[in-house]
Image 1 (tube, rainbow, N blue to C red):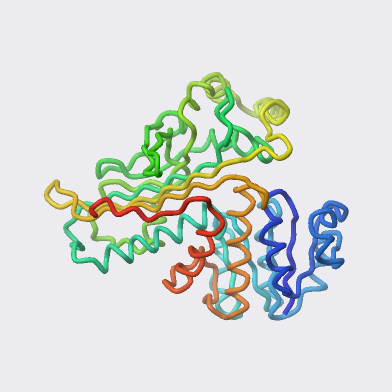
Image 2 (cartoon, one colour):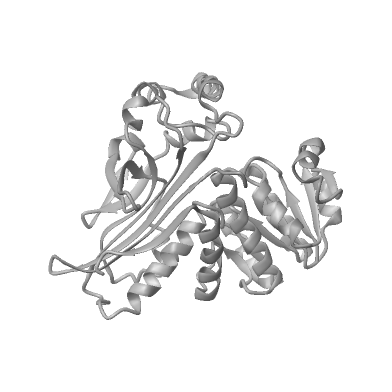
Length: 380
């Protein structure tokens, strides 16, 4: 069984190198062969130019295809894998077109694993752990009011005036600013057209507590089912969101104002121009450390009193190994690949695993990737 790793961009390398160093049978595919050789040429010479038809001709039953390519490639690659009886792994969110492949994947006995990077990925693992821990506790009561918060952000370790730095094209960040979100606040569905309309302050329970700006991201509500929330539970708050340095909203105020006005083809072109300028002005310098902060929090209240409250808090930064973002995105992908090869993940289209055994094992590896990982019990 061969692992076909497609894409050797900035966030792909640590996980790819981990699989190669573990002597797995890996073939590397990248649009620019020279860049792939530069990244992993010391470990393998099995590097090919990425062409869909060439890859398809090389994939056989039981193989695993990893897509670290732009999102448009995920569904075509997953469909090809299902047709060939091969498995598929990606760190990206499950698109509706991907979800539609579930029944066919189950029928073929093929694993199509997504959402197993940082966010989504590690945050899912933490959420599964917290919910299972709460349900097994003496504090569990279906009448409790539950608050679930999950905030993640890639931020500069060395603060700059813009309160943010880019490790890849800023275009995705700019487009996300134009995306609506859906979450729950005060037992009520909260629909927000633009992120800056819902920015709040959040104190992360780090060893030295630190305050960040946070806001809801995408549609949080479908994740209740994935995290095994029962439909009858009383949900006071449920949000998956983005975390930024304090002062970010003020530093980006002019960006928000302009993004709000952009429309049509001219608007899309302006976004690209802004992206190019931001990349020039606010990209990480060679060797400059990035930082990732992730907090996943579950609190249960009864009659206004907190009866159960725990938070996973993770702080990681770039070091001699790699950037924090690269480690925390790609190494969970490599763990999922190994779990697929070991027949530990069910067939079908799935996000990060909820199996307690895999959750604990994966989080054990994450603990070694981050400079700080702690499960804080606020009731202790």
